[in-house]
Image 1 (cartoon, rainbow, N blue to C red):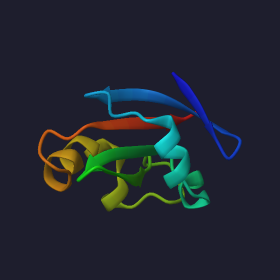
Image 2 (cartoon, rainbow, N blue to C red; image 1 turned 30 degrees about the horizontal axis):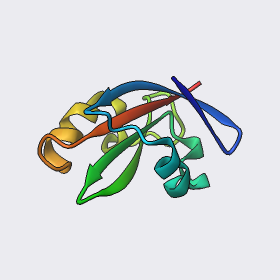
Image 3 (cartoon, helix red, strand yellow; image 1 turned 120 degrees about the vertical axis):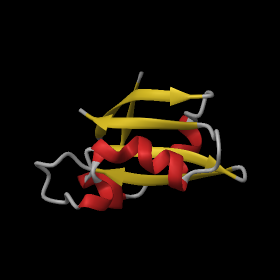
Image 4 (cartoon, one colour; image 1 turned 30 degrees about the vertical axis):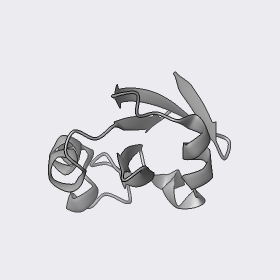
Amino acid sequence: MQVVLNEIVYEVIEEYKNGFDEETLKERYTSYFEDYDYILGDWAYGKLRLKGFCEKKSKLFKPINDYAKVKEYILENCAYDCKYFILKKK
């Protein structure tokens, strides 16, 4: 599935527990996320939280937003067994 945000095409590469909600994503998305390679959306207390991640070759890359650690981030920083999705910029 694909979604267009601010004229940028993203692909939903992972979805857990039907976590993807396009309408809520469009409400929460800002231009801040445009430079990230991936966007993680997770749900906590009925609210969607977004976090950007990068591949190592990205100019924004830092260890804290390393996409290789996205699963670790979900386990350590998201609500237990929460719904979530991951978008990849095309």
